[in-house]
Image 1 (spheres, rainbow, N blue to C red):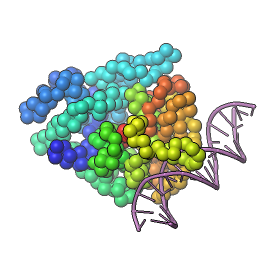
Image 2 (cartoon, rainbow, N blue to C red):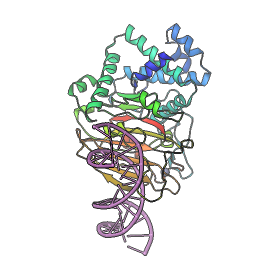
Image 3 (cartoon, rainbow, N blue to C red):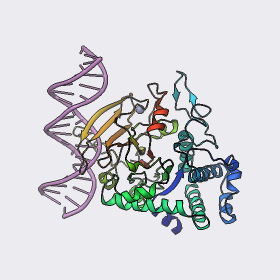
Image 4 (cartoon, helix red, strand yellow):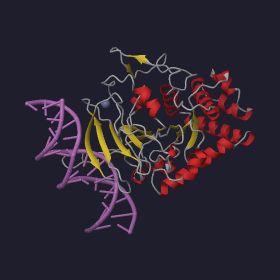
Length: 396
DNA sequence: CGGATTTGACCCGCGC
DNA sequence: GCGCGGGTCAAATCCG
Ligand SMILES: [Zn+2]
């Protein structure tokens, strides 16, 4: 356990995520991937039940792919794999919807990735899987050219620090430089437990800083939080923005909605991402109190680069507030899903340091399918998304 | 006219 | 206890 704790504490781990499929055929199935593990690690992996092994293999494969890939765009694998094919299902209306489909092992699309990620997150062996991945990464660091990994790690740290100090935005040029992992690659950051905190930093590098802490705070028990992010390029460079869309994919949609978090404020107040407070009236007076029943809320955030703040993610949202945020020149907007009975919320805020970056945080799970046809959503997001980050899932 | 947005007031947790 | 900051409410307003 100590081990674990340490690891988790280490701040979020960054698993690179790339889109393109590995050229190597070695990532086609779980076994092939697992064979790449050193014996000691493999032993650990083999102690996992098959389904978890598959998840582990998937995450590792994605990680490997991403570190090797060099494509410019591929964050989530775009279409090649599945996006419009197998992995996506169609619903009655003919729209793509979030149906839970079976994620393909070889596919690195957002949906599949998220599905696996979710499986990992909800697995009782979550930590073990996480450890195996870390051990493997360390192994790679030692044996292979550390460059990328090292960089990555470094970046992460930095980012985190930075985030703590300042805000989210892009702060450090140097980081950027380093980060440049490519301009094209994407990285996924998963934060193990946390919840709260992640901050999204520029290149997506950041993630959560205080996860460990957060976790502790959560009283609930299951907190799961993680973050996933992908970045494409150096956003740092400035560029463009993404839009905040929400969910494109299935799982993710189901998982939640994000709210945004981004500044320190969020970080500081883990408890809530978006909470319910409210004014007055009655409402819930205290939501917080009932702990037990908390609703588990899944929360995650990602950055996109876009000139538009609002992206059509297939759901209908009603804006219910806007606030200025401390240290940010842009206001934060609050939205609620308009579907009856659905309480998903999202926050959208533009990064003050890099105006092209929009951070969207979703919180909650939709209880319904998307309401509008967003056929092009995926394309839009894939094109625009520079960074994607899953901040966390939280129970509130 | 109904639904969405705007926007100031209110609530609430937190740090001092 | 007070002030701050963030999140939410809800009346007023906007818009198709
Ligand atoms: Zn909804």
